[in-house]
Amino acid sequence: MNRPDVSVVMPVFNEGALVERTVSDVLSALSGETSFEIILVDDGSRDDTWHHICALSQQHPSVKGLRFTRNFGHQAALRAGLAHAAGRCAITMDADGEHPPASLPAFIAQWRNGAKVVQGLRADAAHLSFFKRITSKGFYRIFSWLAQTELRPGAADFRLLDRDVVDLLIAHPDASGFLRGFIPWAGYSTTFVEFAQGRRAAGVSRFTTGKMIGLARQGIIGFSVKPLRISMVVGLVTCLFALVNLVYALVMKLTSPDSLVPGWATLTGLIALLGGVQLVVLGILGEYIAVLFQTVRNQPTFIVEETKGFDPPA
Image 1 (tube, rainbow, N blue to C red):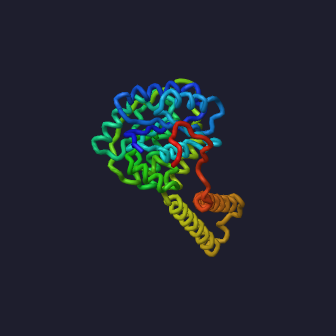
Image 2 (cartoon, helix red, strand yellow):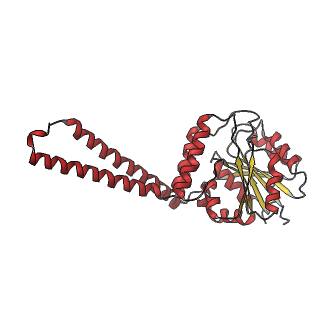
Image 3 (cartoon, rainbow, N blue to C red):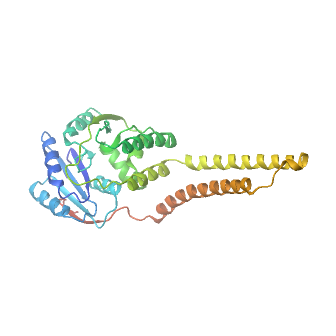
């Protein structure tokens, strides 16, 4: 099998109105390449996205499609696309227009200069909400501290990966649930390309605040045990505070019995504090147990129902 130089992987979800325009822009950006493929991963779309993918595959032999049985999520779609990518390098990007195809030649040039990873860095975009900008920067800082792996502010799922990195991700599927953390953790030589995030050409983003929080949780729990250690420290400090308060009460009771005014406020406050700390610690522990359960269960992260444009298996 002749291996193409470049594979472009794009997850799509209800992007029927955008996919043809985005593919056209990618084809234009790769016009200088002699060998490439474009893999569109339909993450359980409920509109006519798959119909557009099939039509594009018939028009352009370099366009290929994967269709999930249902919506498995953005990270699963990225992993599926990378698992089917045959290129000597693979570029992951969104199909909604926010990752500009015009930046692709710059990514490929850095790879040909020897970089194993070319990471796209999103420049501050004025059209992004203040909440989005401040929470994004806050998460990158917290993750870098907790996981002891530097995650550059603005790092997106717009990146190029050498074949060696792609093979590593395929060999360790459980570690690729949060690519933004796993790839810098792997330590391959990395260069950065800054890009101006575009606006969606149509529709609205499906990456809701809930999904953003879920991705952040998955990244932190999957790459750091510091929350467990922090919860232990908080528990020890709380126990020490309660012990000091108990010793103080006993001393005052023995030395000045009349100085202590009976009251339920202090008692209920301490009970609530201790109970709250215990629940927080149990909650953090439960998150790690949930990750262990999912790993032991060994359930597939995605199921491909149909493919288009790929060579039949030998």
